[in-house]
Image 1 (cartoon, helix red, strand yellow):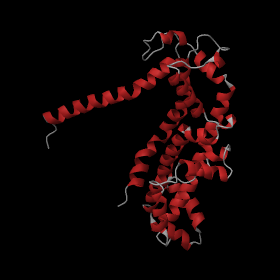
Image 2 (image 1 turned 135 degrees about the horizontal axis):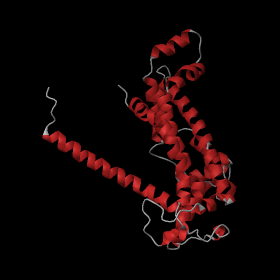
Image 3 (image 1 turned 90 degrees about the vertical axis):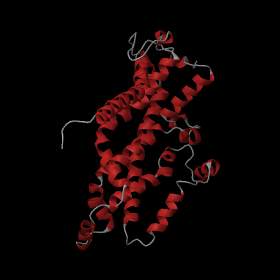
Image 4 (image 1 turned 30 degrees about the vertical axis):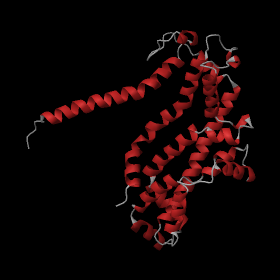
Amino acid sequence: MSGKRSLGDSIFSITNGIFMLLVMVVTLYPFLNTIAVSFNNGLDTIRGGIYLWPREWTLQNYVSVFQNPHLTQAAFISVARTVIGTVVQLFCTAMLAYVLSRKEYMFNKFVTTLFVITMYFSGGLIPGYMLIKQVGLLNSFWVYIIPGLIGVFNMIVIRTYIQGLSEGLIESAKMDGAGDFRIFMRIVLPLSKPVLATVALFIAVGQWNSWFDSMLYTAGNRNLTTLQYELMKLLSSATSQGGMVNVDQYKNVTNMVTPVSIRAAITIVTAMPIVVLYPFLQKYFVTGLTIGGVKE
């Protein structure tokens, strides 16, 4: 076969390269612009013209964020719910996925169908709120953890992955006297690291970015609100006041802080943990989703 590329292949490669470059620019520019604004002098930012590089460098925007005690508490709650919620939900979801992957479980299809139905239908917002209140989770930290113990989509992905594992390993373990829980802990979980890492990132991003449940269930206790909920209130205030936000709480830091610069700094603080975490789990993405999402 000739090593020369056809004219059509060359045109496709060039077009594809240009298109991907445009997608990269469109994707990265808002984030890079927000970083530039967050490090720029607040009063100078009002003049406009900040694109990819700060015009007047300053750290006062971040100082004002971290010196606010309530935002620090909200950040702690966000970190706690992300870590605990990810570990607990991943373990419970994986355990259910293993049970539903076993052919000898006679209610396999029936239980799976019940879980899938919940992906499309729910009781609604008001019945959900009443249920949370009746079980005593209102204004409790555990309202972030317990209602989301099982993720149906994640369960299906993990179950499909487990079904692709060698059945001989599990049968051999049973012949040696291992029970289902021991098999799950010692064989299934170690062999499922790619899909577990992928699902863990999904859960962590969802927990970290979630603010609606904080508004519904913990708004009565400011010590339990999340960083994302506080950010949402700040952005809502900016929208309702035509771009102005009450920043009296930041005046003791510096006069150079403005609502725009504060929003940019909080946005970066909120997004950075996930941005830092992603490269460590990215290598599992293709393997985890490909094997976990397709069943031969």
